[in-house]
Length: 178
Image (tube, rainbow, N blue to C red):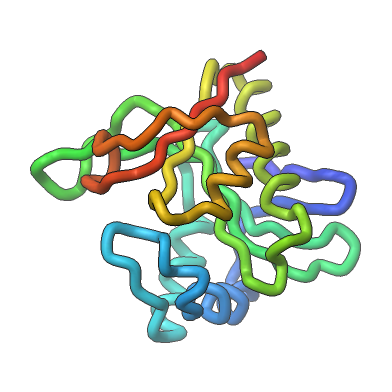
């Protein structure tokens, strides 16, 4: 996984010094309320360490990645951007791969409303298409209108509701390589 940059952002691999930020962000209900089939806040520093270690070790084939989003100049942390295999709904855990790639973003509330999610996601899409992907999907909780607005801003088209992924009903978005 390589670092990605925009004029104001650095998307980089997670490191152990990101644990306190991860705990602060993912322990907030306003961040977690739309993440996962059964949303819950992160409850301990140990969970944050485990997540940072998992994100730092993420080794899917390129162009997949999980990046920490930070300010290029100050290093201020803003959130997470991801590009990874999208799990298909199914009868057993862990869920099997669907063969699709999803893009996602989770931002700290202090970073909301500043265009950071759109800027980071646009750069991740550019990287994905440059690496040869033909299309990318995004799935959101049907009530998560803020993430759906980001998906539209980065050129994704609303495909309606689906139960095909994560054993959950999701709003599905798609963008094709130009």
